[in-house]
Structures are given as C-alpha cells and as structure tokens.
Length: 127
Image (tube, rainbow, N blue to C red; front, side, top):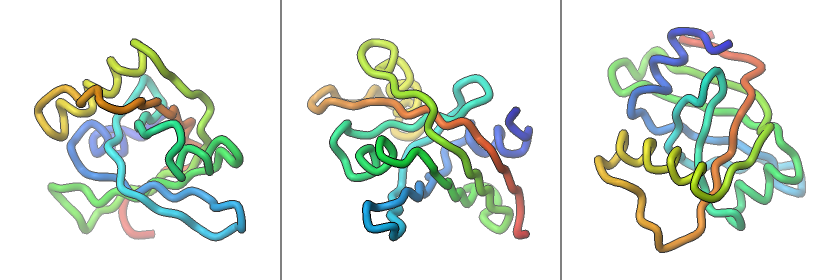
C-alpha cells in the first residue's frame, strides 16, 4: 500500500529520478513523469530506451522525488517493475500523466510503454 504522503507527491507534478542497473552493475538514472496506478506506481518510456532494457533484465528500481511544494522533504521509493503495458491501455495512462505535467496528451510520434512498479520500501523526508 502506498503511504499517503508518497501518494500525494506522486499525484502531483514533481519530476522523479528513476535509477536502474546497467549490465555492468553500475547505476543509471533518468528523469521521468510518474503517477499512481492503484497502489502501484507508473511511468512511461520507449520500449528500447536504456531504462526499459535495464528493467527488463533486472526489474529493481529506485525513485527519488523532490516535491515541488517542499523539496526539503524528499520521497524515495524502492521496488520492482512487475508489469509492462502497451497499446490503448498504456496510452490512457501516458495521456493522464502528460496532462498532469504538460497539460496536453502525449504526442503519438513514437512507440511508448508503461512500466508498473510494486513499491517495496517508501521513505518520506531525510532519513
């Protein structure tokens, strides 16, 4: 279950930084749009992007978010990607996230997929 303070940040428009593991074991981080999907977390990417390739090989992930309204109370979530969505269902989620961040549906010029994260650890604030 998502902590209510974590959900509040995820439902806002703060950019998350997603950390994955490269094939050589080193970290890879990239900014992503995020949101909730029930008690899970969703973000989208291109199916051949480095983060997608990393997560298909090793589903472990960490998210770090500095909330827009209080960047000194960061949110950190660790978990695993447990599902990949594509097609119309994915585009509904992608458009919902895009509306939150950019105020318009996401352009359809490139293929996109949605990764669904099952949170395992959640931290609010410096700890």
